[in-house]
Image 1 (cartoon, rainbow, N blue to C red):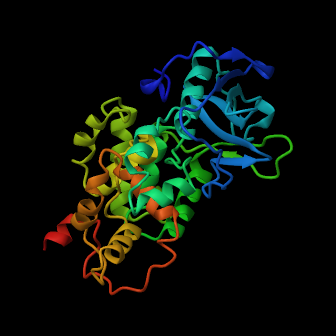
Image 2 (image 1 turned 90 degrees about the horizontal axis):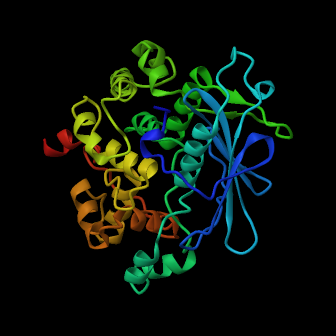
Length: 340
């Protein structure tokens, strides 16, 4: 089965385009705006109003592009990558056929969130004292997802218990060392693909640790990669959480990040994230950082959209106004220390 095919849906509206590509035009069901922000790990970008992401489906290199057209339409294209564009280290690979291109289109749709229906969320909370003004300011806000589900899990494991800047640096090293890259004509910088689960599964922990990943988390990443590569763990369904949680160093925060940044689960809230414990501690008037349980209690009224509600609160002016607060004696994302 092609990588990413587990959550593949066929779209009859996909039509052939230039260069052997497939193109689909989507009218988002909710307000939409193509992100103009750069992706710090180098796997995607928006250049001259065109979103680009490089990935592999069944080992075939594919470039995804998306752009906003007249009215509310968003066009998404998946195209086989010409060999001349690829990293010189590659000796070649299969050329993407229609099946792989359709899977890539689905990856693009999920990553951009064009199929998200946010109308119920907006209707329920547009008059909420906290969320209402934030929704009116950015009604198009939705999770910024990875191209493939494994990518979200790799990033989540990398980011455990460290600053976001350091996590990005580690991710860039992993992607740069074991991923592949493509140089699109007209661009000064290459696009890179996250190394597949099979690639990570074949590594030794010391190799990942050399990129700055903590040894215990290097072991956890390899174990998770082996589960995914062997087909024992289908990341497209929350049922995979039961298998992943048995791996030491993988806990609720990691799985919540997989939910919102991979599957796009709008109710998945990484409650142990440092920014949430600081924000909720401030908004609830505690005068200290909140615990994970207190964060979950704060966002509980917004179910089944707790993750989306959290994104709105992080995207407003609330975070910028956070005062300094005394730290907890433990990291809130570590349930063992919290219980101690």
